Length: 402
Image (tube, rainbow, N blue to C red; front, side):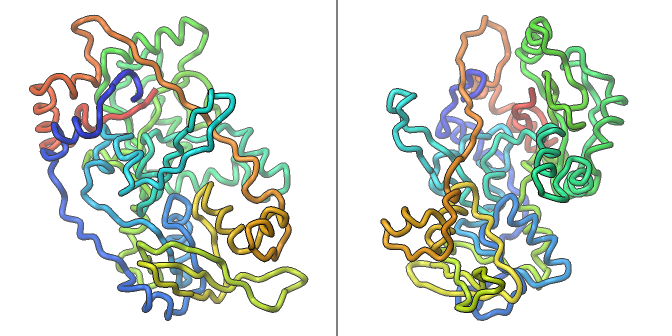
């Protein structure tokens, strides 16, 4: 647990979750069953109803018919997703998480490292820690420089703005050496929109650790950055968080589903796992052509076709896995596994890069307020829950921001 808050899911849910009020959003799938889904006509099939898949499907559904295949379910009004301070509590829970693990790592003394990945509508944005930031300008520009036209920082910025809904900061005093709220908002609004589906806002609650932590970073020569969305993401900064401050809830990719619930062009099938990409027997300009997807629901297999494209958005692990199961990958590996190679593409499933995270736990002096109060102080926890239910703010609406 980050910042020494060694709070178990069971303890936190027992203290807080039953006290958090639910809204009245009704969950409903736009595909009634797998048979009806597979019999429909779609322009596009998107595999994976997660971060990228739902975003892209929503855009395509403005002018085309899109079917989305998602292995997980939609969980509205779920405190382990919605309540910001519950971040991390659904990691490792099979209801929400694929629970992938590495093989034993030789350089970690044989340890197996978990890699949580979202198995829900909204994907891993339902499991992450709600920090709303992005990479550096040079990283995006490098994509363009190696031949990906349209992927430079300047070209992507309009999309960054379109997807976001920025709530201005009103008080920056708890973050030492930060810019004034007026200047910070002016900077952020150059790179964040105000009417997109994903909210970007600031914590209204800070523990007693925030100020000394920031000052310690400053003392080591790490300056406070008041415009981290500008393409310069270096330094210590008060990051926006993916929280809708009006409701106090996590804002995540499921928003693209809820906004399309009544859009007949947008058809989502849940609890369906894609097992193979289907290809035309005829090649086009020497290339194989994807025409459909085979998927499984409760042990039964179905196939759905697309008139235009199959879009693979099943995540960093399962997108390459599905390609390999479909015959695209390292032909030597595929043949060893009894898979007929269609395209010899040795890079599939290789060279994954990840950012590692390590945590530290420290004992603080008596009277220093930390998130641990939710675990050890029942009175504090009850008051926090009542505040969250009433005004949708406070400690339960907070998450990592520095």
